[in-house]
Amino acid sequence: MSRQIPVQKNDYVRVTFEDLTHDGAGVAKVDGYPLFVKRALPGETGLIKVIHTKKNFGFGRLTEIIKESKERTEPPCSIFNQCGGCQLQHLSYNGQLAYKQKQVQETMVRIGGLGNLTVHPTLGMEEPWRYRNKSQVPVSEQNGKIAAGFYAERSHTIVDMEECLIQHEDADRAVRFVKQLAAEYGIRGYDDKTHKGQLRHVVIRHAQTTDQLMIVLITKDKTLPNKKHIIRRMKEEFPNLVSLVHNVNPKRTNVIFGDQTEIMWGEGVIYDEIDNIRFAISPRSFYQINPLQTRVLYEKALEFARLTGKENVIDAYCGIGTISLFLARRAKHVYGVEVVPEAVTDAKENAKLNHIENAEFYVGEAENIMPWWRAQGMNADVIVVDPPRKGCDEKLLQSIAEMTPERIVYVSCNPATLARDLKYLEEKGYEAKEVQPVDMFPHTTHVECVTWLEKKEVVEL
Image 1 (cartoon, rainbow, N blue to C red):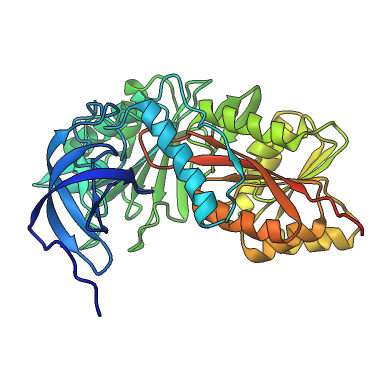
Image 2 (cartoon, one colour):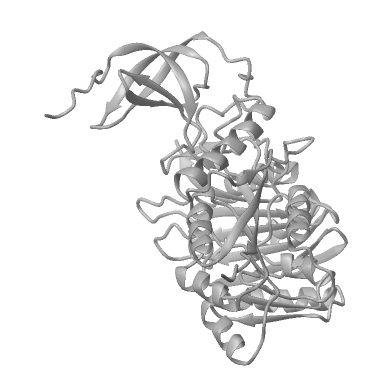
């Protein structure tokens, strides 16, 4: 007998919210039937309109707050309710930190079966605004005018913006100025439905310690009208501009960058520092977007690695060498592996830049290179992984276990895939000791974690 759904579309229902989902929606239940409602907070009572129902859950829209949570706060962003960039500005910052710790704890139990694992309180920021050092802003046209901003939640509709309170002020100024130049010089915004128009994205990178600025204009084809005037105007407007880049992406794709890149003016990189380690950052370099919290994250990774200066360390997703170079200052030797050749080139240059000679970098998939290293007689005392959101490939986890390091440090941007991978490593003889959430992305639902695993002692009978 099929279960009767207790509400129907367009019903108005008074509910009390019990929890938040992983994407920040409030959860209420009507006769055990879950309803997910954006902008609602646990402990609140409200009136909702049911907007969609499925067999096991539905969605509603908050129409009135009857009893408000003490953690509710007024979002300072004027387009918070339209833009999909932030999900939690209506929740106090302390409330956000507690939510992220709870989210990680529950995910470790639900997916990893790790009920006894210590999940520490989330490490937050003193000033959780204007933290992003990189912005990738899509451009289009709306009502005959250039529009630039982030997409509305779950859509490809751009919410035109004047400022974004989580990115650097120079990024806001750059987007506004590019819109002004495009209007003056007749440069059309890109329409991803018709594949017409010219200007697709503006990418801005700002270096916190040097104040250097890079602006990248991404167009559908090579033509960029009034290029000399654009260069002159940009240099006049931004005294800290050191790199102005033109990238061409002619494909019908959601991928931002194309294959062809030209330095219009200045350098091909900007330089930034984290804890006195200097990094050269190119337009497409992977570099953590919150430098203050990156230092917090990496210091915790170093603490969990427990290096004494005698260890061989493998960094299995080394990127441009950010974690590797931190580790190299405390390790005997670090071996970095990365599948993107350009990133490995950057990593080698960054090692030279910092006069670090005990770090080597290799192109390839770690799951293929590590067995070869092992066959050559190399042992790793510590292995560090910092994979993308999809987590580690099972073949890589198997290779890690076969290297039998004493310790594994797992840096993750996705608690769900982290929990899955910890469960696998537990089955291969490792014990997850501690998880430290770090708030790299305030006012969003994303949370970064550092986890320390130790090889289990084999008890001989």
